[in-house]
View 1 (cartoon, rainbow, N blue to C red):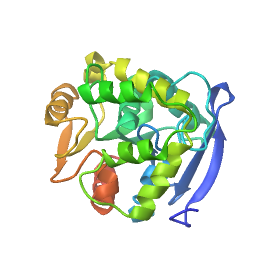
View 2: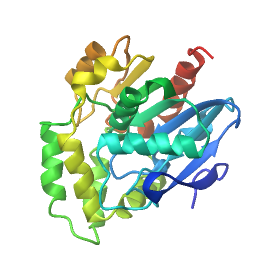
View 3: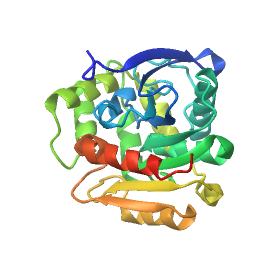
View 4: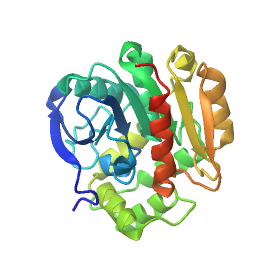
Amino acid sequence: MLLNANLQTGVATIRDGVKIPFVEQGDPGGFPVLFLHGYTDSWRSFEGVLPLLPHSIRAIAISQRGHGDADRPISGYRASDLAADLASFMDARAIESAVIVGHSMGSYTAQRFAIDNPHRTRGLILAGSYPTAKGNGEVEELKDAVSALVDPIDPNFVRSFQESTLARTISAEFLDAIIGESLKVPARVWQEAVKSLSRDDHSARLHEIAVPTLVVWGDQDAFFPRAEQDVLMRTIPGARLVTYAGAGHAIHWEEPRRFAVDVAGFVASLPR
C-alpha cells in the first residue's frame, strides 16, 4: 500500500532487458530531478519527500536493479553498472539531462553518473555520501554480517540494519514499509551489492565533476563521518555542505520537509 496515493507508478525496461519500477510526480515538462535510494532500499525511500516538492519539479524516484520490485540479475551492482542503468532509464523516459539526488549507495551512483555522463548531469545532491567505502570499517563489518545471510532473511536483522541508519525516531508505519522493501532483496543481492560498495573507488576522478553539487550530511551519521564529507568538499569543485544537526545517516527519513526544501532551493538556483 502506498503511503502517498498521488504518485504515478510505472515500470521501465532498461539495458540488458532489466525492468525497474519508478514513481513520478509534478509537471511532465518541469525540471527533471531523479532520486536514487541507498543499499537494500527502493524508490519508497523518498516517499515522504516527494509530496513536499513543488509541482514545477518533475520528480522521479526509481528502484535500482536487485532492489524493491526491480528485476534481480546475477551481476551489475557496481557503481559504474548502476550509473549505466540510470543513463538507460533516462533514454527510456526521454530525459536528456537531470539533477541527480542520491542517498548513500545512490549518492555514489550519482557521482559515477556525473563522471561518466557530464553532459546529462545538471547538478548533484549527495546525501549520506562518501568518496569511497573501500576500507570503511562500518561497511566492512556490514559485509561480514551479510556474508552469512540466507533466504529468507531474518526480519530482525533487517530491522537492526535499518535502525542503525537513524539517530532519531521516525514513523513506525514508514519504517515498517522500508523494512518490507529490504526483505524483498534476496541474500545474494545483499552480498553482491555490499561487496561492490566495499571495492568501488572512483575518488581519484571526483575532480572531474563540473556541475553544482550539494552535500547533505547528518552529524550523527554512523557510517560516514565528517572527514568523508571534507574529502568530498575538497575534491568536487565548488561543492557546498549542508549539515543537519542531530540527524543520522538516513537524513531524508528523519527530516523529509527540510530535505525537500533543500532540494527545491538547489534546483531553483540552477540556470534553466
